[in-house]
Length: 507
Image 1 (tube, rainbow, N blue to C red):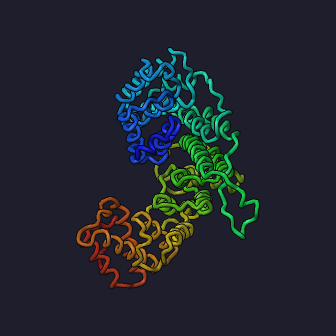
Image 2 (cartoon, rainbow, N blue to C red):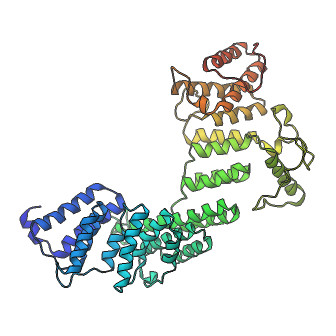
Image 3 (spheres, helix red, strand yellow):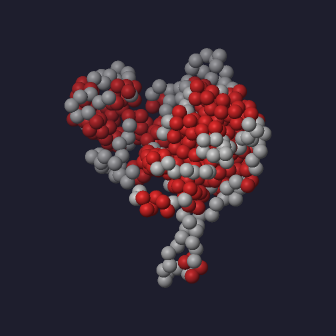
């Protein structure tokens, strides 16, 4: 910064520049922004620039706090209180807010130090604002200081949130709601969400350059692009609050309430739910083998442009074919019976199942969980869904733009659990050729992972791998392919795979 340019800057302009760099660090987490702010502060100190506004020193405190230079930040505040910078430069609510915004504070000791400043602020008659309490609430929630957290939430609100910008209100209300969730107070958190939805959503209006293709009215729109970021920030905080409440509902098995919030969220904000939020629902319904709901979640993700990851597709596919335990089987049978005779919907809470019944027989009269695929004729329509499994599998390849028949393609590489379920589905559908295709895909993928040694996936998924080889052997013998059977047995010897049940190795 050259000297002539430096002397043209006013106090407010210098303060604004430092504030811009501080805000840039908060939103983008770039260390370069803090370095630039510290350079400006150093130039001011070297040139002994006298600034008579508290705003400048508050921004200096923010910069030092963000850079983990707490002693320097506290020294500036002490000099402000001592009148070093002038009688008009005193600590105010923004000074304490700058101290509280310590991004490096993570422990109980850090919280105790900040609480001392909070008590000092109250003793001076300075009323706390929501913006000042926000980092304290967040830190108290993270370290588990629930009594302090409750006190901060119940403290009187002196700042009217209705006068704030929507994005600022979203940030504050979202933080308060997250604190209520930490206290397991879902109703209070939901009330914060309802209050947030009453705010006027910032307009997403951009500056449109003039072009013959545009109307005159659109060419006259000159709104700063900062408003688009404000709109995005509003929706990001709102989405975070929605998903936090949905997660608590899912944990408490209140699936209907969670789905209502999900539908309301998709109608209210333009940002789609995150993949993590969708995975919560997928895990919940996959555990209960609710294939219809899984299809709905899959369609929602595709409509919202959220591509399912490996975890989601693993749940989609394996939920169709996994072997339930006796209690889960009983619940599935009970649910199917209610639907068939009474047309009842799935209850929000699962029915209680007696666990004192003798093994092998249930009150429904159905047998215990079958151990072999050949024993599934009587209950496979309730428990196993091979067609749905293969549909999910094909959808996974379509999403990755991969050809399902191309075994050499590296665009889509299913894990052992997916391959095991898909091979089981093709076995039930009596398609041994497709069973062998998936087996070859699995072997090729494992060879790519570890060309010269035993693949690590074999150690992590011993049981699924054993079933994969068993089904491949059965499929080779069904089509009387002795060469493939010998090849499978040879690969078993190389990898040291043991079949789940002793069978003859004669081709």
